[in-house]
Image 1 (cartoon, rainbow, N blue to C red):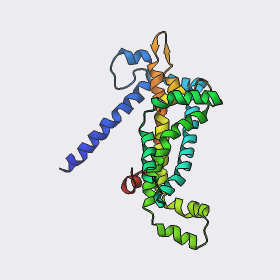
Image 2 (spheres, rainbow, N blue to C red):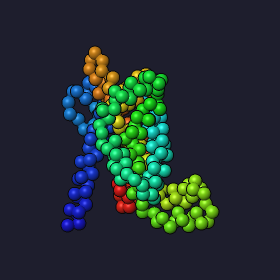
Image 3 (cartoon, rainbow, N blue to C red):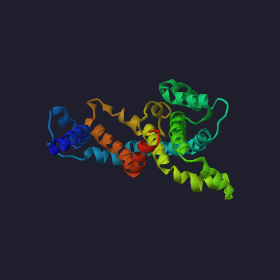
Image 4 (spheres, one colour):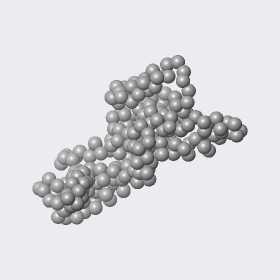
Length: 266
């Protein structure tokens, strides 16, 4: 019985890791070998695909651009969501629940609905093909999600803490940054994680709102076709490197995510 208890989770983890292993396996093969047949290990081990990514400006600039707008979006989304979530958690006003629901409806809308309006707007004000353009576009989806998550954490903090801080002479900015934010640190970590991951994997808006200067890695990966077909080894290597930022973020916020599932609305 003990062996069975360990066998099922082990098989499940192996099943989940199999696609990642296969992607890693393909990244060390040539395109011809990938198309040649099935093999668990590369017959001719090569790092040519990784060398091309790190030496070709088109490739590594795609990663830099993606990290730039994703980081910018995460900072903006969390910064604007914090005071909004505090207002929803501490005050009651006319239409507060309707406004809260309206925010969530923005998160439910597909990105394709907003691609054309954003494209026309940013082209007219000179924001097209910039990191800020993609970051602001993703805010439309991330800020409602961030407000929803943070409001759940903030509602769990007793209001007496706010009143005690005011009686002790704390101004609101000082109270919010010195006392309140540390109390919801796990919520901020969870929120930043979800904002980062959505912005990192979103491709439609990122491709539509950029062309050259701020082109993300997703756009670069879709342009690897040549006269001989797609460079599968290169695409696999790019896919492996695309997983790494998300894995790093998960590593640093893993404790916050666990608390978020136990305490918040995640």
